[in-house]
Image (cartoon, rainbow, N blue to C red; front, side):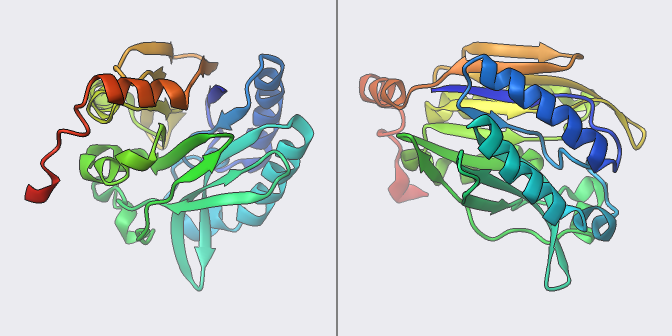
Length: 254
């Protein structure tokens, strides 16, 4: 299966502009043969702490994503802010090409350094979807620093997708942790980040698709780009069978 992540300069709290750019890039990904499209964390608004303001766009964002999936024939995984019963969440949804929602995940670890935990509640479930024979588990940005959540679903996952707004000044950690998650879990990892400047922070992307040995399949820095490559559940299974690193874990001691 060919997957594509969109790295772009997210217009601050401007869903109309962001949704327009994503539509054009999605068409490009489709024309390149992609079947799954992955967008960054809060792709339509940027990583804003104005939770109530940006969450009000969630119904519009969901409608556009549903229409985009139907128009392009792509499955889409995308992040956005949302409200439920007066609480706000940093979330993402997986839609199949018919626009049907197959997965909904809420960020488990709000980024306390930016006081995200003051504005957004944490999610309480890890979610995995199987689509076209590929098992996909999404996480959001700060979740990347917690390897235990990846390991808890390693046996059910072929591709981890990390949706992010990860600042350039910590890009070494971003690159290193993504590579570690791929190597230690013997799984594909697609990290989709933004570029540009927002709320006083610089973002340089470093979006990347890594294979189950941690090798780079596609990578882009400081430019709008599609991060594209082929992923295979059979390859994941074959690597785990040949190199029994995951099977050799002492889970009885955890």
